[in-house]
Picture 1: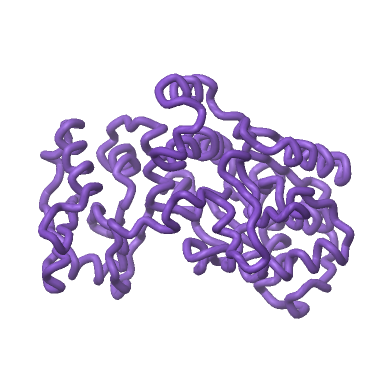
Picture 2: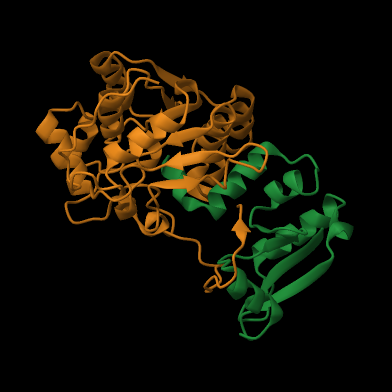
Length: 110
Length: 248
């Protein structure tokens, strides 16, 4: 299994706040070493590796994780779901639910 | 599961695979009665219950009782229960999570820091617990309800609540209907509806987060009006060119 973390740099050169938050969480949760590579999606550079891979995979939000197995590539856009399902690390249920809503705003009128 | 023959006299042409009756019949044929349920919001998605009870006697319905619904909605849920002679399972949030939120932030924190945390506790968590015991669920989501729903299909793998070990199918039988279709159907069949709709509420949720709108407003304007409609900061403008599973 290979894990790639894709994070975004805004047009003003700053990291997107959500990406920064997830990067800090990776360190805090002690799982940063499980990430094999990091790609930057730089708004100032359409050819940046992160933007190219996002276009290839059809991902429309950052940050995200690409989990490549022998037979399948899976993209996770919700950090806590990635943490629980891929890294088998307990995730705070309310934080995950909150992130789900942020990533999938269509859920809020269920 | 014993299914009745279908009446096909709604807005979609007879035999159209996307008609709500067709989608519901397929769903109830595919899943055992105790593994599939309708998510009823207490609003115009009562149409789902009307259609489903024409197809099968074994309709399971649940509602997310956030504790903050309008009194009219609670009365309407009760009316629907009596009208159709069905059970409606009310799902409550975990009291510890609610108490913790209120202790930390008070009763109206969503006006300051957004509705996600409150909705996560009062809606998403109970929904997730419920879906852990189902293989499929049915929603009233429609494509005309806003940009976040513009591509809702009638049937989808639920990548949000499902997993590789427990796949879940989500049915959205009304995906192709407009608000006008729904109301034409409700009025033509004399189906009970939430009286808040007569007071200008197009979309009905929790009392503090819902308001009436004008005749030409989009229904999204009636919910969380103090927030921007979509968070753009994390957006990437891309198109998929490689098959991949995006699971949320």
